[in-house]
Image (cartoon, rainbow, N blue to C red):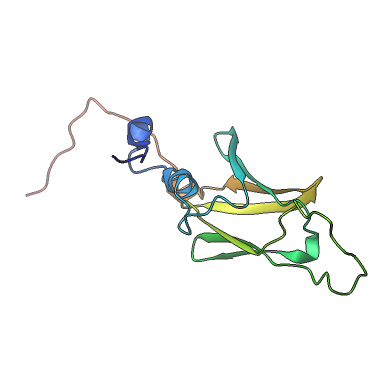
Length: 148
């Protein structure tokens, strides 16, 4: 029995114009099969999105964001904790390395990223160039003469 969830019916209105569906599909099926760290994909407006990654225990220097060929990669590495004189009686905060990849749709750009209260917020915006936007074509009642 498949647990795959198809979002195709939700995107029937945007055939050929919006492939942001790929971002949601890749978010729903993480290639590594792991759910660590948990994250949300949020939509604020037609052209504004945010990915929120729960990065508890990580600092800014432990995280790396990279966009290459339309794929946003978020990775986090372990900090070197051997320098401190800390003996953990119980360690429940996972600080293991991770790598998340999100395929970005056409014209989606990463605007900003910040780490606040253990949450990595990645703001995305869709900037469609003027030549790629739909154009209204006027309909005339006059038939132009065809040159044969």
